[in-house]
Length: 311
Ligand SMILES: Nc1ncnc2c1ncn2[C@@H]1O[C@H](COP(=O)(O)OP(=O)(O)OP(=O)(O)O)[C@@H](O)[C@H]1O
Image 1 (cartoon, rainbow, N blue to C red):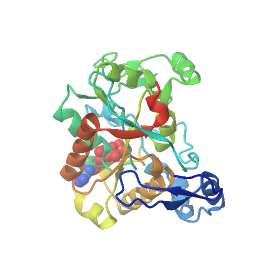
Image 2 (cartoon, rainbow, N blue to C red; image 1 turned 90 degrees about the horizontal axis):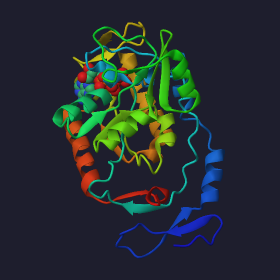
Image 3 (cartoon, rainbow, N blue to C red; image 1 turned 30 degrees about the vertical axis):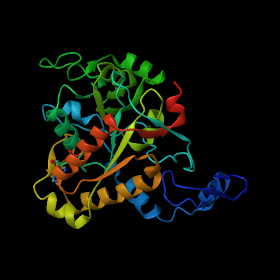
């Protein structure tokens, strides 16, 4: 309503019945507050993270997961928590996808083991004509049972490095001397087939995906309380972070703790980018919540950054 005062702006909730404006901190004031804020809440968690970084996502799983061939590696771009831009204000505009236009990119974010693959898998099974995932690239040699462009796009190490240099990957990592990565073109390829592309990424890559081209719908999948984790994950398995064969093992107390801590950190650093938060307590409830959110995305009007509506 008014940005006249340097410190406090007047604002009103869109659609609010109450006609009176309230006060919100100005952009400049908000930035100053962030600069002064002590990172007290994140310090103990960060210590855990640096000791063992398995709380972070090991990406590109799903595609390799098709034959339960889970393997893992740590991300190369391991600056997981580089401060995102200070969240203050972003001008938005209403957006509604018209029929025939590309779908918004659906991005799932969450700590490792929270259930992102499980949720993606359920969506894919529910409607394989509608949902799809990207095909990752790798520099490792193709195995005899594999087909180019099915499990992976197989390219040479040299070409992989050139593509890294040319920023063709949204994420990449190295595992046992081979590169693995998700290219921007692999996302484009799914979207151009008029399918909904599902990806999961580490949150520091979100800022590179927030473009008019992808119009990402970012869903944060959050663990429930530690008590509920103990109850619901009794029979679940997580890919072991300690051995490099990618074998799975039951969750430990430490895994649960790490999941909860990482989720807290992700939320405090990137929460302003999440358009939907889903607590993965009961799996089928979480799944139907996700399914409904994605359905709404296709039928209802949403607020998106104004720059996404210019192109
Ligand atoms: N709500 C739930 N209740 C019980 N088990 C669950 C639930 N959600 C996921 N799981 C189980 O937890 C395990 C880890 O799930 P999943 O592999 O989907 O996690 P992820 O987030 O993709 O992890 P990663 O980053 O390690 O690949 C799987 O065994 C999965 O079946």
